[in-house]
Amino acid sequence: MIAVLTSGVALGAYVPGLLLVRRLEEHGMAARVDVLERLFPPGVLERVVANKQRFHRDFRLARAAHAMARDQRELVDDGLAARLMGEWDDAQVTTIVVLSGFWAPVVDAYRRTRLAVRVEQCHVDAVCSPSFRAGGDIVGCDDVWLMDASRGTVDITIPVTGQPVVPWDGREQRMLVHGGGWSMGTYASDAAHLAERGAQLDVIAYEKADIGLRNGTRYFMNDPGWQAWNDGGFPPFGEVKQDGRVLYQAGPRYPGSFDLVRRSVAVVSKPGAGTLLDSLHAATPIILLEPLGEWEAQNGRIWLENGFAVSMMEWCARGQPQELLQDLHHNLASAREAVPSYADRLREMHRS
Image 1: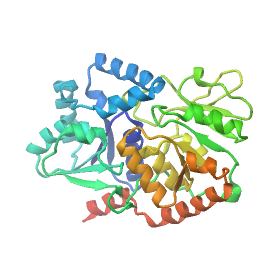
Image 2: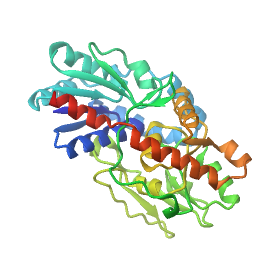
Image 3: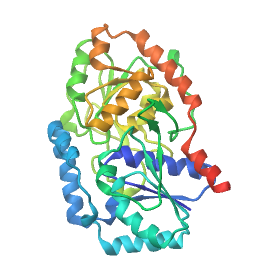
Image 4: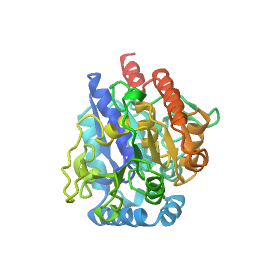
């Protein structure tokens, strides 16, 4: 059994973790996803939900809070952690993959008495994200980096789906605009700017109060009542109809929003880890918005250097050329075929 440890606070860790579990299951491997917030008492979870709303509405506050991320070990309920470790024993977990550094105290405690268990920290960002900076060390673990910041390369990946890339000529001439898993950043004002210039947009809104443009703009939402620690699947997703109704559906193998990514000519977003995975596996270029922090800035740098993205400022200054997006798409399509799968690597490791 492989246990994949994620956090529901940041979908950039949660969604890649769940994708990894789904890809492992497709190989016939036993895998489970565990969400850190399930070890928190109810009062802490209420604060998490409140902060999500605050950060959506105030990007500067979000940047400051992430810059000061702190160890969360005092938030973990010891009884719930002990129960989870018992579940790992019963399931005969042999490998633990950590996607959020805040798991470090729990995993370190488990690993100290179960030396045969292999632990890998999987970094989906190009440099240490706040959770790995604040979480502390895990004794005897290995680090897996999807990207190498020093060389500017994409070395391994977590596939979103096995579906083929939609050919450029078969795509809708629309762009998908969003603010990552927590809907943060400048994406709403950037969407208005693009719409004024005639762009056809699909916008993922955080709440219905965010919906404004209607001149050809379509709106979509994740179910605002969904929380990863209460569910364990992908967030229910749907289009906001003209009358405000949304029929939410959760994709069983990958997030519903990825279907929009596959058919779009570009994603307009900050360079979060989940957005980069979508970009690579759909071969859809990113028009980069302001990053949340240094880890996202480094993600964006790698995408720019590899010809997978263009900044919003440059793209607009050059007159919004579709030819540039097409070139970036072809670069991504070539890279997608060359980058190995982390799920495949884990499968081979367990065979040996």
